[in-house]
Amino acid sequence: MNDLEFSYLSLDTLGNDALDAFARAHPDGSAYHLAAWRRAVADAYGYVGQALVARRDGQLLGFLPLSAVKRPLGRPRWISLPFCDLGGPLAESLEVSQALAARARMDIGGARASGLELRCSHEDALDEAALAGRKVRMLLSLPDSAAALMQSYPPKLRSQVRKAEKNGLTSEVASGASAVAEFYDVYSRNMRRLGSPPHSRAWFDAIDRHYSAAGDMLIVIVRHEGKAVGAGWVLLCGDKAVIPWASTLADYNPLAPNMLLYWTIQSQLCERGVRQFDFGRSTYGEGTYKFKKQWGALPVALDWREWDGEGVALHAAPIAVPGAGGSIKSNLRPMIESAWQKLPLAVTNSLGPRLRRYITL
Image 1 (cartoon, one colour):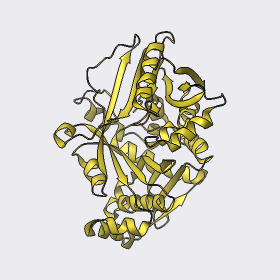
Image 2: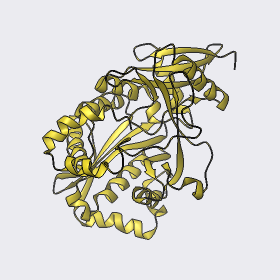
Image 3: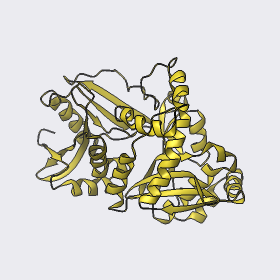
Image 4: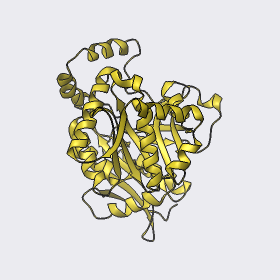
């Protein structure tokens, strides 16, 4: 690997389109690897984004997307990537991927960064014993038509989707500022119910601006009598898709809006030529894991690792991926969540993003 040429590419430099094309064609490329994610992070939260690029004789062999996340009074921390499950090196071979990670570890000291965190998924399938208690991605292979997808579901699942429709729910793919506004209303109300600070509206405006420009996103809204009661936001990368955010209003959950939401998303993706759908992060064996598993999704363990400012590994094994509450001690979290749930929506939507910018999950 001594013949590799490394360079750093900023977001305002020519060459990011080539990295995006590489990500779309790569079997492990995700929507988070696209420059749109780093641009949204920079626009909404001010964290500078760049990519460490590996070439040989001028040919692109891989890259590592990075955002420099800075807390008050602290030095920036390189993360690949913040606010999502998956980043890490994307390369033509394991050797190049490892070389990218090694180069980043070597460079963090000179950049005066406080450390490096890489968010990858496990390369090998793990058995159930090894998955117990771990955070996993839930991946579903999609057929080439919505009809084939519906036939692949077990009868109970098909009846649950039909039940939602019989309950008077409708769904649609929406776009534009009005769709973002409806999504954010459902999302922010659900986050308050969960006792968790929401992202800012500016974050979703930035996501919309950068991903919709290339047609790499869709928003699905579920309605009851015209009112938005469920919403999901999907990001695309070639023939792969991921859903970072999905929410429903609790008062309408007996009508099963989540069933119609996920059916509509998957059926739309089938018709658009998407062949892999990432349901996002879950804890193996728990409620959200079981919900995603019923659709046929299979678990892939997340593999997050971190190093200090000298490039020394902080853990001998992958770090435990926490929940949305970050590192808050478990005995304090219920009290904080309960207090948050009692705040007015206007307060949580104003205060929440000021906290959320420092919660990089």
